[in-house]
Length: 405
Image 1 (tube, rainbow, N blue to C red):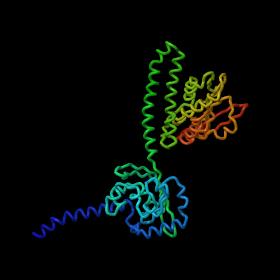
Image 2 (cartoon, rainbow, N blue to C red):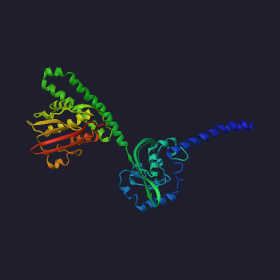
Image 3 (spheres, rainbow, N blue to C red):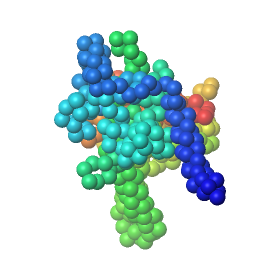
Image 4 (cartoon, one colour):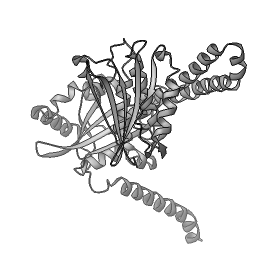
């Protein structure tokens, strides 16, 4: 009877004990922390390491950095942090941070779920900061993203940070530098951008579609007004798309979708379209008589965007009564698109022509030539150049390979 009662009590206990040990061993293996980290150091030892760091000058530049910077010992305890870390996390002094683990200073909701603390709950195996810290301790530079929930007063808030780690030796001790850049504003901005472009593109697309649908009715009433309304609706839609593409290109999120493209078809359609642009009033848009027909395997949308910007810039730089010419020449492995206008660019402007936000047309401009270079060279594997002289005018050229794949 005694043994039956004992086993009734002991078996579930042993089962859950073994399960807990197995789970903990799995977490440790995932984080590769089972034998790499010595036991936690005492406050006196942490203070001594902090003094060694200060005396060595190894982290002297960290105080000038605008983002959170920490130095961890091999026990994963903080032995240094900069002022940006204190102000961002709401600490008054470094003494409140020294000796703590990363989950403790960030007030991670999972930091106190186990007796061992930060690094030992099942959720810790997915912590980007802890993974980066572990790799940094193995003498590897590491970059990652950390998404966690943290306690802020009585509330829970989300934290998104980009983390970078690198090994550093201080007074013979192997340590790890970790920098954390708060991405909360960036994440919110991108979410708002996606929402904005979704809604505004639907509205502009609807307007453009309506103008095309009722083009004949408007034509019968006032042909010139019909042309202006249709082109305005179209270019409104194109400008919104252009901004969406530029933002995606700068953030590295732009996807290239190659397709078979006829250089003649693209050139002729864009020449016809931009002849209706507001900047084309009084200006002729002509296609070169020597236009070559070449088939490229490239992204049609990005190519239209590049050539459209070239045409628009040329039109804005041309006075009434003059001509803008677009052409395309066959190359041994690709094609060279070019746009010519009779004006010339001053030397000091030429030196800054591709810089972002540089413009001679006022504030809020200066993205056209920048986006031409960004899209052509970064995404279509091309090359952008120009030449400008008072006698010959200005020619912008984009050389593209036969295939951007």
